[in-house]
Length: 363
Image (cartoon, rainbow, N blue to C red; front, side, top):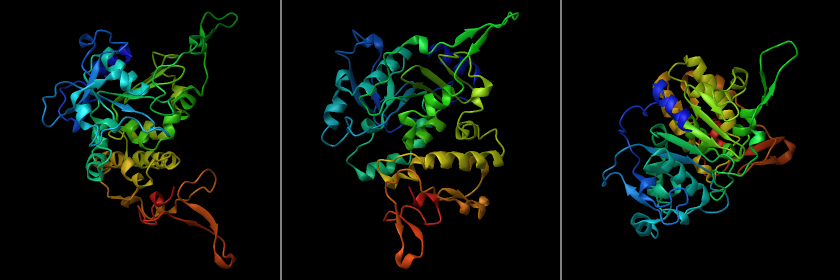
């Protein structure tokens, strides 16, 4: 991790804001202290964390973010009832495993603050949610590093797993009469490890992944590195092979590089993003457009186009020709027979969260 981060900070000016002082902070962060402040930093029995108000308390240094699945189990949350305890300080050992592991990573990397949605946004205030969810894109855009718990199905799954390292190492081969050494690896390494992981099925994660300047995916077998210039993993720590990068999700390669891409490339990246995003799940279907709004805001800066409920004005009317695939699970729509045998129709959730001409009106 430290080698990947060090090279990124040194050689990748586009992976900002990591090479300059932090200028923007979320409304709240978790102050996890540092490893030097804990007697047992990697086994935090006595170490504490507290909710830190950036508006009223001095905040120095960078912060990290955490991408995770809530799952069926409600994680520890910031509410009116829990606020006093969380602001006063609680034991790190009381956190769910995924959050506690993220604290360990922060200590190891020397970062004092981390941002976790359930602990930095009041979960029992609709007004708070409306205000803070609008800033979600900025939260991840300004993160020093995003920790993605990709193989954890809920907050108790953790970032660290027992593994057989032999399954990670590439097979080294030599052919007869050839002095060169070849590496035999799985060409689906990235697609299976990242895009097929449980976390990638969560809709909010697309925005978190695209907007974070750099992130480390904690998989069940290995770590994966991703920044705006470079991708790597423990199997190929130097760099992912070009042939594998070609197989990476189109939305990742297009949308993360919008400032260098042509408008046509950006729109193509958006369509790929929407195609994958619409397959993901949301705890609250009302968040359909909110959970991708940060990406839309960044794109609008590049292409100078008007955003219309998931579509772009300059691409109309062509992009109105989207279609919904009837296969797969559907959470809030029902495939029904219309009266008088006039064919099949889709019905939409009520109240409408988007105009009927937008793909965002359906799940």
